[in-house]
Length: 133
Image 1: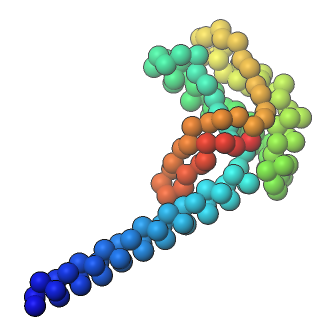
Image 2: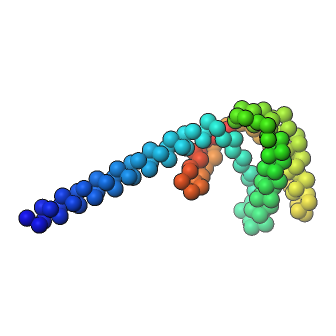
Image 3: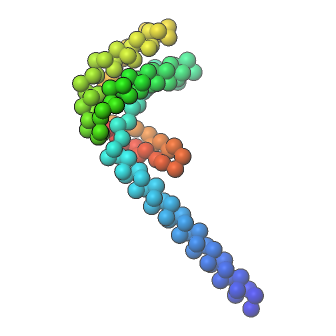
């Protein structure tokens, strides 16, 4: 008789855990889908996988974000941010190029705005889907 009671409790706990897992997955999917409609994602690609190029990539990223934050303080939508970036693409390139040169490198810089395949990134409980504009 005890074995039957144990199995009922085991089943109840399993169903509760399954419910929690499905709820969390549903929440994460809804948040991620919403992000795709509201996020303008910046992707900086380093010249190589070497540590010095990876470090430079983060410095360039930070400078471009700083520049864009100054431009986008009045933007209200993803479309506004895209338009601002498109209108300032040459300036964004100059910020990146100046940063590279200031750090002692002489790499060519390419800036593109469009829809690209990116790796999915997860920050805490939020995932950025693989495809963003």
